[in-house]
Image 1: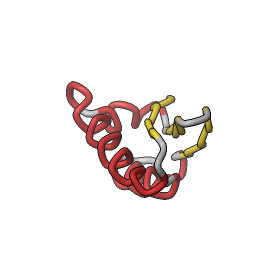
Image 2: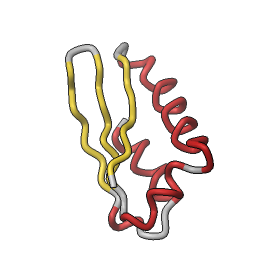
Image 3: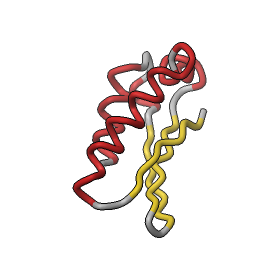
Image 4: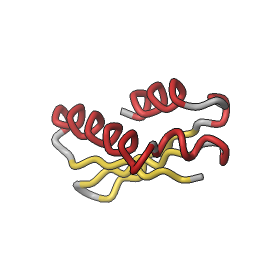
Length: 76
């Protein structure tokens, strides 16, 4: 799942070398913390948060296989 978030984020940003994803397990919830270059935060969030919402939707759909709730937090 981390690799999925990493691949999508690297495709969106201008500085793919600065993309980092860490997983924080909180029982039944897994939070993927996405860290990008400060110049790329707007590209990952998108207009009115549309890209961030789409990223969260894709990850949540893929998480059905692991039977846990999953979310993505964007950290600059």
